[in-house]
Each structure stands twice: as C-alpha cells, then as structure tokens.
Image (cartoon, rainbow, N blue to C red; front, side):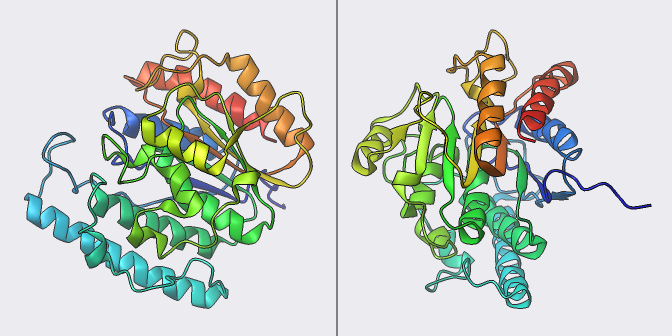
Length: 320
C-alpha cells in the first residue's frame, strides 16, 4: 500500500531557545509545536546544545562553564564538517563557507549571547536541510532565529523567493545595535547579509529587500527601525494581490492578540486568530507557499500547550 504524500517535504523541529531573552517556556512550546507539525511532514530534529549558558539566566548547566563552551565548540566543528560532506554528496555549494571562519573563531564573536550553542545548532540545521532535498519546509521553533538557516536554504533552491515576516517585532537588530544581545531579535538583518561574521561565511546570497514584507509589526528598537529605513523594508499591502511565485512565511505567534492566544513570552501583538488563519490561507492560495516557520510558542504548562497547539494546527491546515 502506497504511503500518502504529506503536504510538506520536511518538518524541521528546531527547538532552539538560546536566542531568546525569555526562554523559560520555549522548550515546552517547541516540543508541542513539533508534535503538531509532524502530522504534515516527515520530522527531523535539530540537535540541541543545552549546555551553553551565560552567567545571567538559563537552566543550570551540568558541565562547568568552560567545559560547556568547549563541548559547544566541539559540536560546532563537527556540524561544520558534516555540512561540508553533505553538500559534496548532494552537489550543493550555496551554503559552504565563502571565507575562513572556524567555529573556534566564531566563539569569540561579541554581541550575541549563547553564541556557541546558536552557531552549532545553525550548522546542524544547514546539514539536515542540505541532506533532505526538501522543496517545501515546515519548521517548528524555537525562537525566531531558527528561520535564518531555513530561509537561506529555500532562497538557494527557489529563485525569486519572497519572505513575508508576520511578527509583532521587527527582529532587525545586529550584534552592534541589539540592546540585549538576544539573537531572536536579529534574524531579519541576518537574511539581508548582516549576520554575525562567522555565520555569514556559511550563508548564500541574501534576500533582496524588495522581496520582503512585514506584517503585524508593532515594536522595535532604534537599530530595528534604522535597518528598516536603510533597506526600505515595506509592509504587506492586503489590498494588493499576493502574486504568484515562491513564498516563505515566518509566523511568530507573538503577533497574535494575547487575549486570544496567551501562550507567549512577549505579548505585544494584536492580530486576531481568525485573521491570521485567513492571511496564511490567502497566501497559500495565491502564491506557491514553499516554507512556513512557526516560532515563539511559550505555554506555561501542559494544558496551555494543548490549547495553543490547536491554533498551530489551524495555521498548518491553512497553509495547505
């Protein structure tokens, strides 16, 4: 008996929490989101590097700080070697490093908290994506920065890829402008070629600003708005057609009205759930939806995880 074809080719369970400034409930949310998304694509998990903490917050590390950082660097080196081998086998070269930037050098990069773990997990995600050959990717985050590897991959295989960033926040800081050093506030700048230098070496061509649209943004730092002005990043015009061609949706659940969807670490959004479902469905109907990433699900307990998962399932259904 032939197995039914699933709507997406890959469900990337990318539960990275290290990029967020309010990470406490993200692991629970990432697990719940992955369980829902696995109904729509074969599930592959990005290995987590939970030992890499900073001194101010995060679960207690089982290793000493120096030992934990050493383990993260070892995993980053291993992931980089596996990535290059995978790309050689698959005939892919877009994500191979364009200049020398070893994981050892990467750890010295200032301005990004928990950088070792973030970089190791990014390289692992690239390796999984390169090996998958997926044309349509469903990603269950994790914090917003999980989308850097995914968008880079989709941009390499879908010429003319457009990105619709549905989020209450601009996420356009750089290490130089971020007040917090949390990487979930930097993915938009990263996909435009402003990633931290060690990561930049593993990324392909940046997204063209004309192929990017924001929707739902309400909050940003000075650096966020500066990049938006510099690149002339526009808002999605609901009165205009979405238009044909490949589209990736980044959907940060904090864009939703917390009165309807309270399972969040950041409650700055005001988008009604029904309006969000309708927007995703419209994009899927009018364009070729090749990617959907769902991030920042932060339920406080298992009951909240079950309740929020129902909305995640509706978003996935709308994308079909």
